[in-house]
Length: 142
Image (cartoon, helix red, strand yellow):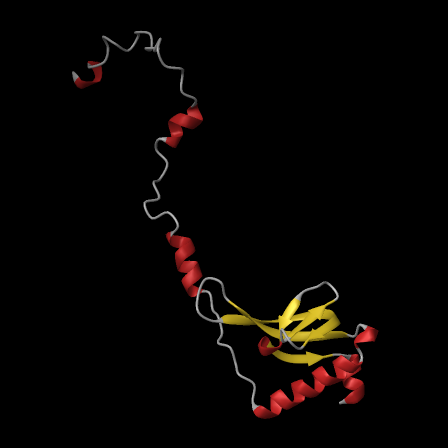
């Protein structure tokens, strides 16, 4: 067969080496054939859209009364730096809704003007966003 001899005239010639360009590494040469991601960031967008958030739940009148009693008890015992679990709503920064977060804090102050609870770590929690408060101090009085 004549086809097998098509390259006989060049098979033994030395490989061309450019004098102007540096030799490309095998890694760089292989990168030329890597798959192309035309939709860069699409996977993250899909993941973000699938991430669930929940709506803020307004407290009922009864729940508001209970929370007010708890805040009153805390106000009278701030000198003890009471430790409690606070369940509060955090709005989502990227989309509508948010999530409820529970955190263990020591209460340093209740700022009635700003309507916030201030922790010993100087974090502020809006009273409006608080769903529930629990702790040993509150258990003694309720």
